[in-house]
Image (cartoon, rainbow, N blue to C red; front, side):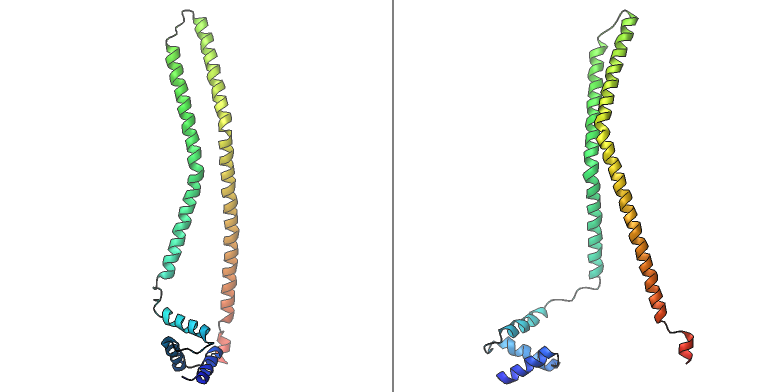
Length: 195
């Protein structure tokens, strides 16, 4: 192929006026390797076309598989967020239970040896122990107060997210109504058909 004919075919190709036979001729020419100076960009373009023919078309369910994968990823991310908050709370609660249980276990073992002959002294000692336990429980309740605040913050966050979701759903319904109205306005009426 002469250089003049090559320039003419390339110009037709860039203008979108080339036929399929001319494009095949260009591909064959650039595949051969005897390319004149100044046509390096075209060589890259047509070699890309030759290579891209080997790429298979996506399967029919390709889009559905991608959307399923995205949904699975979103569900996994949601469960990870729940685990991120739930595990520390449960760990703290388990630690508090272990400490409280240990306290009562060791206090019971230590106190069970002591006996009092005088009931007034036993009563006074019992009151002292109960006040100590009450003090410890009150202290534990104060330690758990941030956990309660975290739970309240989580509840408010979910409430805010649900409110935002409701607004988005409402706007989507409005868009759906608008689309239906547009579709109905384009449907020819019986009057137009009879004319």
